[in-house]
Image: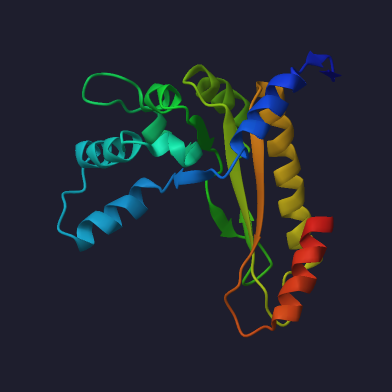
Length: 208
């Protein structure tokens, strides 16, 4: 398929997407950021170093029989650059186990200007170049998470549209690079709102 003068191999994207949802397998989200990982380590008295994070992640990617239940693993930027002790990149170790390597590419949800209580997910700057690098490192799919809080007057339409626009741009860049995009508009369950209100917002977000 040609889009804007670029050739996109849709069959590769389709095959990868089907493999990710095949059978009774699921995705392993091991894309926690370094600060989050360090916080967990601190609570247990574990040194918060690059090596301890690497060793912890090696335990995950080398779990015996992991590929029997996991179809894909979402990695963090530091993680996809790390290796097992024998020098094997984590992405290759996962692929050798029949698990498709993926990568989280957003830079987190930040406060949306002029919209108290609402967030916008950032990370589009330089994304095309980062995606090309991740593909070279073995990634075959990517993840981007948008966050919508529910309140008396939120989410505002402007917040929904801004996040939908960012998700669409991210997804297009992923397909251009040959990566399957996981599009994750998450409506938060936290709050005093009813189940019906959550369903209403979820439908509005998905339609957008």
